[in-house]
Length: 115
Length: 111
Image (cartoon, rainbow over all chains, first blue to last red; front, side, top):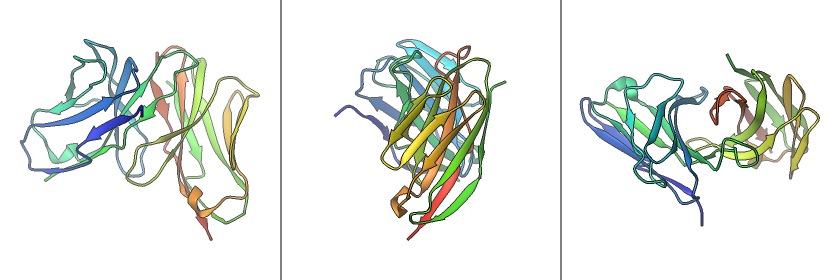
């Protein structure tokens, strides 16, 4: 079944640790996105990719980095986690930026807590 | 700058009590308006895409409509399982595939 996966679902980690949040999709989509969402707040785009070896920063400044070596895989890395990074991180993908196919499909999210 | 404002922030309904959620938007050329449903602790679930004023889409008890300035999500005879946060997002013609989201409306349907 075509889907989008995120691991881990929950992560509690200490300050200064390096972490990687995984995102994979089996839908064959070229475009992938990372959003950050605090409780009760809107989603903010932090990174996006239009294809292999393409990555761009989003609207919200983030200390994280991303890579896109394979179409289906779009991991997000924090080199040194801080309590301000505590949030929900959501990965999404879409077939196209044009209609039809421009709707984004989301993974289940990773809830990150940095102590 | 693209903006999306959703109202009300929270809405409580009794089962069977129909109502509407509002999404007002400002965008430099609309390519698409999207509605999502989000359950606590989960990722948003895609519901509808609307592309032009006058367009309507339906799915079970939900109906989405679009004008040049706003979109409505009508919920007919809601059930407790419709309780969730409903998110609206817009895609501008000048922003590629990037979306701008509203803060959402938290809907609670009591039995």
